[in-house]
Image 1 (spheres, rainbow, N blue to C red):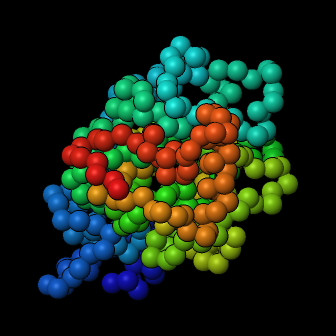
Image 2: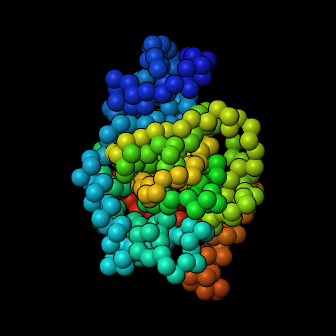
Image 3: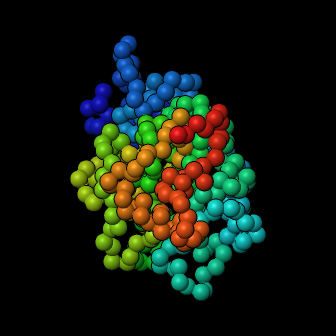
Amino acid sequence: MADRLKTVFGHLSCSSDGFLGANNVGAEASPSPNQSFKYTLDGPMLSMQQRQFFEENGFIVIKKLVPLSNIEEYRSRFEQICKREVKVPMLTIMRDIAIKDSEFVAGEKAVTKIQDFAGDDEMFKYCALPEVVDYVESFVGPDVVAMHTMLINKPPDSGKKTSRHPMHQDLYYFPFRPAERIVCSWTAMQKINRENGCLVVVPGTHKGKLLKHEYPDWEGGVNKMYHGIQTNSGVEKRVHLDMEAGDTVFFHPLLIHGSGTNKTKDFRKSISCHYASGNCFYMDEVEPEQRLIADEVQELLEKRFGKDIEADMSTAWKMKSRVVRGTDSFN
């Protein structure tokens, strides 16, 4: 089964189950009586075929999951935030390095990403959307905590390729474990393809280890905290995820992924949330591979709250997490 998936994976299509998978991937979907699953849990949402696909590849796209009416609500709220009509506690607003110092760019066009919007009840509706959370339970269980929230407004590239996002693993940014009970939902807010910088994933890399990340040596510079893996080994197997508005990809935090440049004249929007089980735990110390990001987070905490603050990377995540379902019993 594993060899067959690898052979046909280069040709993606939507199956009759309504998810994005390899052509004919279901032809050998009969499970072994003793089959065990590491990355998914028993539940009503994922079919056996879907579970096997995620176990092998570390991601799955569910077509037309989020209603277009909801997407328009998130888009409208984003515009309000950009116009400073609402103030969201703990929100981080980011600008692309190519335009961050320009006095002529304002409003929505000046913002390339908002992070940590969980303090806004309107934006948080995405994180709590039953259509999304029902699937999330298939990965983290019944106790669901929203850990990291983003709306990405990828700008048209300036020609310096700063709109791309280096290949990376999300677990690099997280001081909590286990990785198997963490999942990201990433929803396209419009048609997304290679022209406007779709997600790029490397199937199967969720089975590997956390890699060292650093700032890439890019001629046009790189955005703050856009760290990337320092190897190209296996990246030739990457797959580009063409998606329509409402399509949602769920993926494991060790899956290597990134996104390309936006070659169009319009901003490309997506919304996402990383979830963790309420039974996860914070590590006493981050892994050696996380030292760079831990130091940068400490810098940001001291800049925002003063140098006397007694906080670390875990403190930052505790401040911006929010329970979605069940309970949060993080240690």
